[in-house]
Length: 151
Ligand SMILES: [Zn+2]
Image (cartoon, rainbow, N blue to C red):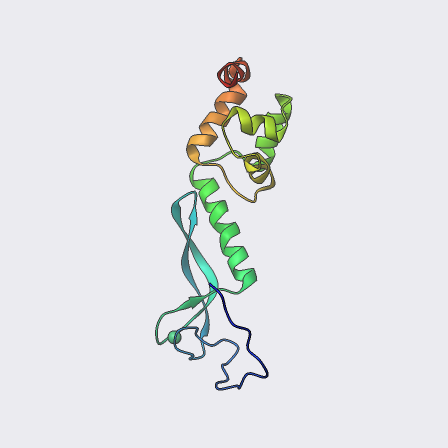
């Protein structure tokens, strides 16, 4: 979609408060409560999350740090729920198998950056992928088997 450049100055028609509701313009209230955040396609409920809420229309707005915090806590809750391997544990099992992040990703048919995201904690593996990682770690010959499928 093309947009025309506005010439000259724009006229200010309305001044909103810093915490104005994007729907109705009313000033929003600082509050804490349960919010949900999707992790691997599952809605994870995070209790006691700070956010702004509109009393009139229930609109919820997160500041950048609040949204980062919500995401981190959702990943943590998901990780605990499925007792997933930590990022460090994923790194250790990969290094013990003498594989690079890209090599392990290829053997498991994953995107090239996926293992790096798991190891750094920027993302978490699904419960199914976690089981597969444990299998590769604990069952001798797994890597050779995966290699034979890749060949
Ligand atoms: Zn509102």
